[in-house]
Image (cartoon, rainbow, N blue to C red; front, top):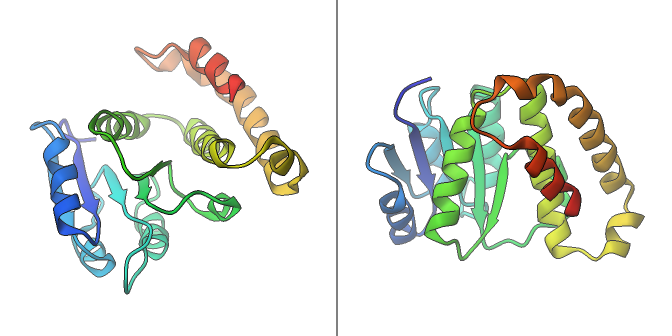
Length: 188
């Protein structure tokens, strides 16, 4: 892992991509791309985090995400999009999902979290990915919709299994208050 996070910002609105890039601390190495093809051309294994627009002409963010996962599965990917989450996000391999408009503090926070996650075990990565999906769905769907969807119930079961498996890894991570985090996640 490099000492400076390498971030690729992908958005088909060049001004927005440049704004997001300008929001990141100077110690980050940031590249931008304005379409899916450009993103794939600039992406390599040295990229730690990708901020990815989901809806782009030509090669979509979903397609770019699939290619990123094929090339470099441990890269942190945040979908940053105007598309409200629906149950289809359960099939996508992103690590975080932010709905536009995005605040600077949220963007910086997600980049920092995703960079730290590169140090986590596969179990912890899977746990946080599934919790992010749960949070995105809980923000948009009613309790009835969530409780009546078998895929969501499977997600809840997987989160609990991963939580139990992850407890053994918690002592390895510095600076995180996981008891408080688990308590907050249980409230969702």
